[in-house]
Image (cartoon, rainbow, N blue to C red; front, side, top):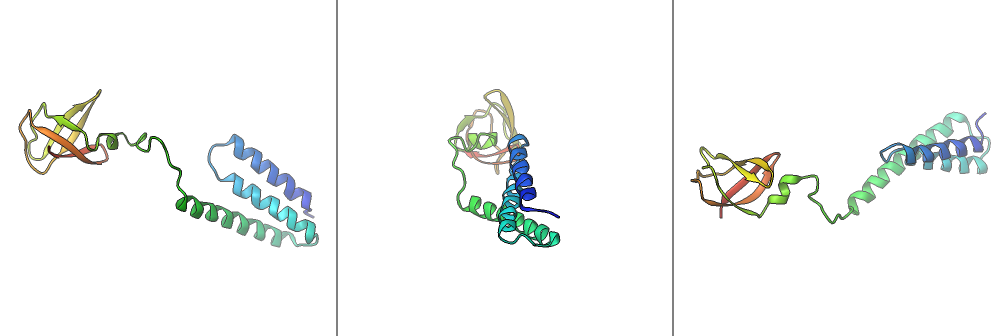
Length: 143
């Protein structure tokens, strides 16, 4: 027979594992287990399959609730383009060292060479501005 303290221990173990393991998932399982443990204090003769059902539903509801709340309240970063390197160059002006032929070319930015795409061909020495990124390709237009 599963008693309230079993759920309490399971919840605490899951919360401790959340601190050790990367990700943000076990916390919801642990919180749901603690909630079922509290319900077991009020209703001590709850069948085990009902306990598991309540735990599964609470886990899912808490996870989905957190995701919905997170979507409404995104974390603001001081460097929002940190892992999207190409977006750091949007709006910057460069001088072409090589011409853009058939809409494609290359530019050297800092220590990297980037593939660029433009709607028109441009000769070397032209001023361009980066307007967008698409993967590893910088979209440019004449400045």
